Length: 320
Image (cartoon, rainbow, N blue to C red; front, side, top):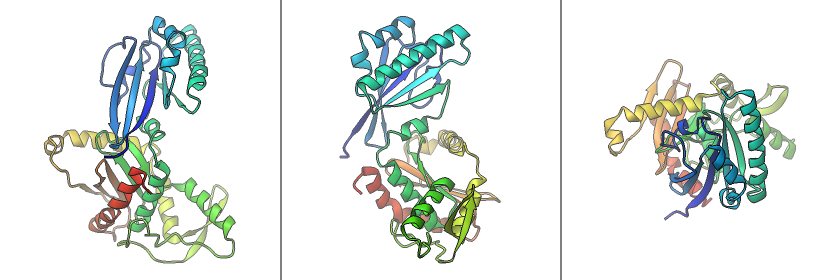
């Protein structure tokens, strides 16, 4: 059995701010009465302990006084929802209350993260801060992307389809090359053929040629295929992860066999501009690999995904 990691999540905001329409973690309509607690399991071993705090004035005052040691202790994340339709006086009061909440939060939970939402916002970004080994998962997805000769790899939680992690993009790649250049200026380092994480690569470009890539005034030694990948990545929508997550949720609901618990074997989407392969990766996640190279077959991508399964199980469990 995996070791359970419990994270306390405070959901706060004045009555009418829209907390009850936030998706995935809340399932209730109507006003919250005092504090309602619920638990949601995520990625198998991460348990979110959600404290949904009522927004009526009498409750708000008690959270900062008689209940503060209970409400604000051992918090992993505070999510505060503002009402954009509030008048000027209500807005000033809400802002003052939020500042008091922050001071109390950091007094009792100094390592907590705080998010400010306006009605709705991406839960994925919030949950991502609570995921153990998120950085290692990101690096593993980057290696899988290169091994497949793909543009991007994205990891989703199996039940909610919230974003867990995605392969490294433009900025992190530039930073990585600067670090490599500073540690070894005598010889360029190629990123191709980096298949140690996922085993023998099937669809890898093993060319060792490198060239300089200048992006935003920063130069680095990046291989030809990696330069092409980053150029394609820069053309993708910034909010693509949330849109993909929503589409996959709708697709899941439209598939009776999937919703009835039968095993789902994956999905291949082929369009003129790209191909997407979506497969189960671990017992708690799906991976989507996006390719823009028509020479790379979906089966080659699937083979790389299957070869990566055990490594990602270990990364998700925190054993590597």
